[in-house]
Amino acid sequence: MAAFILLALLAGQNVRAIMDRAVADFRTGRVAASLSGFDRVAALSPADAPYLWQRGIAQCYIGRRHGSVRAVLRAALHRPLSGSER
Image 1 (cartoon, rainbow, N blue to C red):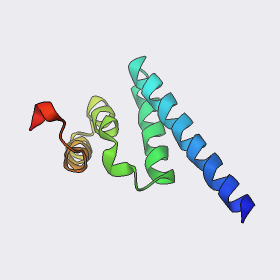
Image 2 (cartoon, rainbow, N blue to C red):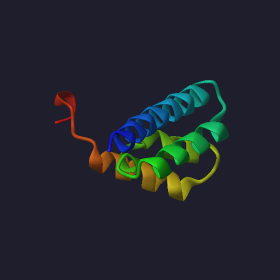
Image 3 (cartoon, rainbow, N blue to C red):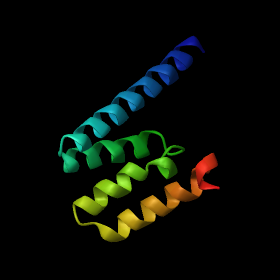
Image 4 (tube, rainbow, N blue to C red):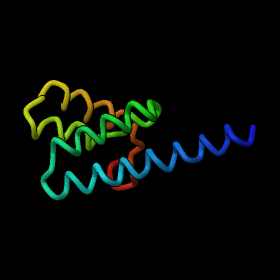
């Protein structure tokens, strides 16, 4: 049981590292690499996939307009509104 918990914790850290790298890649103009990272996060953590609005923006930048609109809308539907947006 302890091994399972350790693996789950390590997987979570790995997903966080992949996400951080994908964001860094996007910020430095490596959009295709960032999309690859966002896709890995979505595959490794399906529960987080609807919140990956950055994935939609990266898709838009490389010309996948249909997928980008879908990803951004899905993220918007899953994101709670902040006080300034209500």
